Length: 415
Image (cartoon, rainbow, N blue to C red; front, side, top):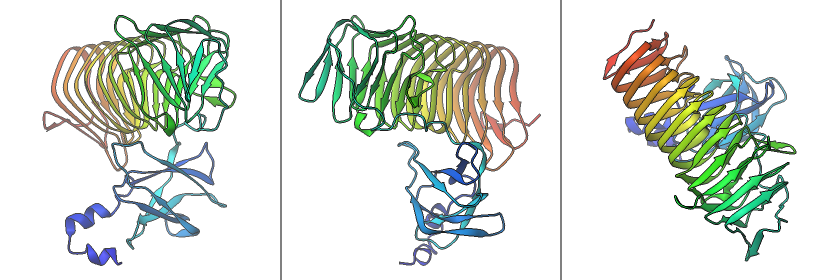
């Protein structure tokens, strides 16, 4: 079927079918390699990768073309890896079924460093702990105090249930990695606690599609570090990787890792959260689709919410004493937030690298740098603000050439 002919008279549909150069397809180098790349599609229709070349022409045609699935901002962005015998400068592609060919240059940054996260068969199951009960493929940890002194690994195809009132204390090399569904549902009177006093690698990771449906509610994460076991590691105390999960009414306190909560290629719903005394970043979302609501952050050593690529929406953010940026988005991130309050912090907002940010109801108090927008190439970084209130802000708007910053519908001129 000739799709070009079919849609030639349907201007609106045809416009949507055609990719937007530099926006529909992103290409990154794989750890600095000139011949190995990662691709991410942000086009609403399937794309077909045809080959590689220079700015002038396609030099290397793929023997078998690669089809990239359509983008949907409600599901995680998929990453594809390709290699070539010669250095790659441009990727040539088109919408599947259409004739017009486009090219996109490799970005001068690397793809998100999620390669070291867990794959579904990376580590064998390890559940030989005396306090774990097994029944019909499920594991149960009852209420009470339990010590984990070595890595606990829950296999795919199974599940782990943690009862209200359970306290998990990580000692020595203790950590928790679940490839199956994790259900840790406490209550306000009887929470579940994950704690360590000394374990640098005491952390929790939920990984893989078989763990989808995981639910954590009324859990406290105290003193945790970053996950590391063999070749698998994460920079966060709690990691959701390639999984659909919900986290509600939970708190992170005195976290030593680079991030308290990391979302990587995840579809997550996060709500009613407390982050206090976090040495690094409170929440990092990359290549994910996340709904994050009702979040309180205090005493954050780096960033409050950091979004790289993917989609985040939410409301009800209270951020106080953030050492770097309360909200930072980059790498084509699409972020929509209603009601953001930032107080006693270095910087409220930084948007860069082709991101699109919308904030309705922005309140700033005693902030050195307000809203900063950076970008110097198409597509431009876009920031839209509505109902801005500020008190004791040294520099309210910081804008460079090549970005679009509007406040209540009025454009702010670049410096």
